[in-house]
Length: 72
Length: 142
Image (cartoon, rainbow over all chains, first blue to last red; front, side, top):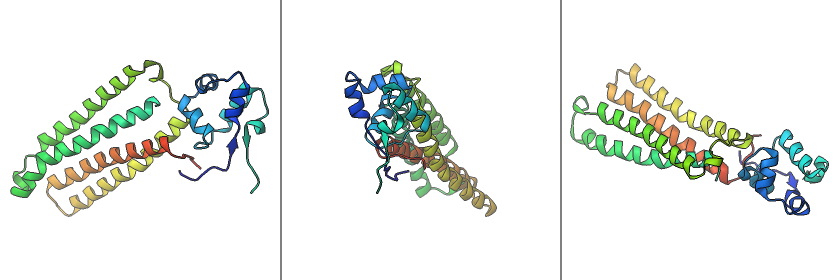
């Protein structure tokens, strides 16, 4: 349950680059709660592939521009 | 706060006084009377009904405080809910096993009923705490 994720994301910067989209707006467009967007953005929750693709589609960018898995 | 998190806070806030009220009604009797003379059926029914009714009322209040969020549930909510239920179910199973062993040992029905009751209540309590912790900390299902 509490394994830290190594997946990072650029949701915050993408939101600001997209007319300062709010977390609530993104949540509505993806179909999740605002709390889930907050958890994803803070790296506390890794979304399903489907939600990940939906987020990328909202920003009209490829998936790996939203989520990254840095080499360790 | 997501509605399901509020709902878990309601369950947590309701579980603790429920347990305390039952303890106040029954423990003094356990300490002062023979087991066969303890009046535990009515306190247990009162506590169970009170727990259910308080939970329902608490959820209605939580939903009314933000009606737009009340019917929203996403993948994370579902995963947290399932995880919390799995954790809580271990205590329910533990209570049932204790009750089974007590029944095999021909223990008084007071102990058998209380093992099941306390296992269920502890399961609800731990399940709520687990879910609330999952909402606030890192949560991954893998």
